[in-house]
Image (cartoon, rainbow, N blue to C red; front, side, top):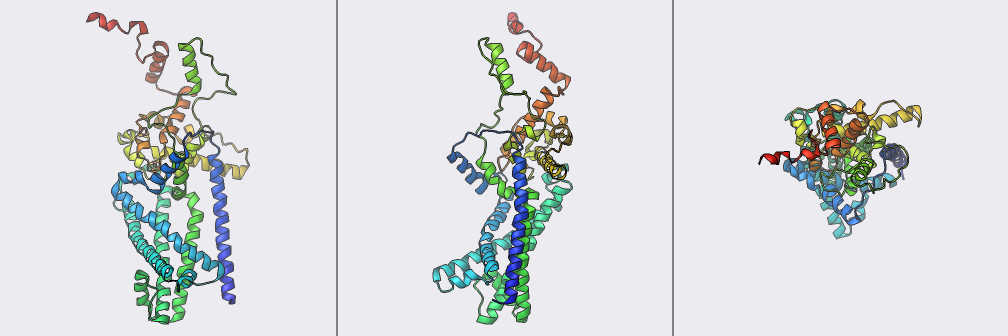
Length: 442
Ligand code: SF4
Ligand code: SF4
């Protein structure tokens, strides 16, 4: 093994090891943030969970409510998954200092050799398609200005994040073709024919005029460039909305089983009403202070916090939200983004000031306002539309319960209704005994 190969192996192990270490630390931080939430029991069978995950995360079933966007997304998604096969070969080559180890290992085994060539061709065709789809995605945000990508909550970092990843993809694909093209050119020069890769063979045939040293350098540039982009993506992923490529799976696996639109009672209130209606009802004893709704992320369930980290910022929820459509301040996408931002701010504060960090802020008030929460009609359209089974409504309801029942912050008109419900068991100002008065005129 040459000295250069040993240096290459050391660099490879150093780069990959450092990248996994940095990424792991951030993934662990995200896990801890999700665990800040309250326990929530999700009573579903394993079959239900796997079915949801296969249909919604893997099969992208809900994406197809918008067919064009779904098809474009599917190309990138399939390409991302399939490209990992070539990455396996790159990793083995990096570790043992070989060159196209699988190609050479399968060279004399006809079936595997053919399969290898077919797979790499498939990867290259998908990569080329992904290149064009990525350009379309960039144009949808910057030139065609699709409405749901132009909303205020996407200004600044979310906008840069979306375009950064798209730029990543273009560069990464370019490196794949540079690597395979230069390698094919070398193979053509040495053997009179390429590897059998149609696209990179075509590019390679245009490079055969270059000296071997230049081709070897270009191949190495493509190989290392591809690897560096993959490792950068790994480190960047947990800071980005693209984390959904991983979290969509656990999030759909733990989908809530309740019928859409079902709103849970608050046990403390339910028990009070039960005791009013039935004097024999014994109110169960509860431990500790009773708190209504959620003021901060600590009061939300872990599932709602997982939802927040899974949000793709696609805006389908906001586009379907009647409150948003009628010009109200509410955007369900912003609710998810604010919840995630709050968790990130807490973990940043803990890193800087220790585990007892407190900033006297809360999700309710400092990130999400009462005006936003009051605009929600609880119509459930956001939950219905979300391609990864996120429920912004669960967070809205919990925060609004706190706003009204703990902070007593509700408009006078609502307070009148609440008082009537309490006194008259109906929203109107009539005594229950007067309800049938109108029939006397008949
Ligand atoms: S439930 Fe609320 S947030 Fe969701 S779409 Fe309806 S109005 Fe908008
Ligand atoms: S909550 Fe769902 S629909 Fe809304 S932006 Fe996030 S991923 Fe998209």
